[in-house]
Image 1 (cartoon, rainbow, N blue to C red):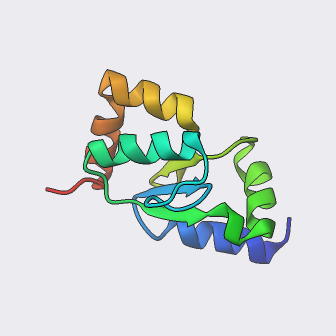
Image 2 (image 1 turned 90 degrees about the horizontal axis):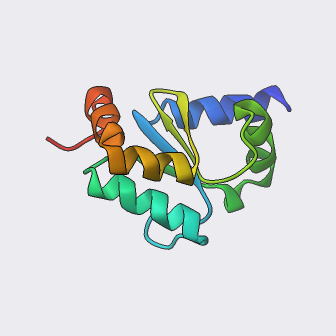
Image 3 (image 1 turned 30 degrees about the vertical axis):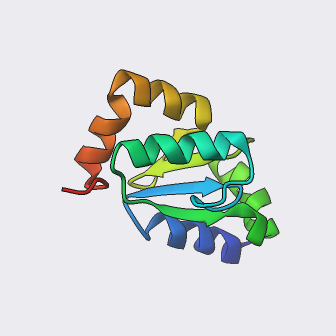
Length: 109
């Protein structure tokens, strides 16, 4: 993985407290898992930066190695990988996602 791609990943992670690498966009998700993760974030009132991995094939492949996570979507909060759709939904149902986003300053007041 090139330094340039790693810098792009880090740039995205620095763009907002919550970052979702996903298939498609929040308004037009291109897979059910990305759609579900987006819905959970929105229901928490999260302000999040999204990255459409289909627009950057190099980033899409590099991020799997960077995160050591093979699938998408991938949610990061404060630069740390939270997980994929299943983990995001489990945390949403338990209230942990809301707490994490609130503490990170990623929700609207």
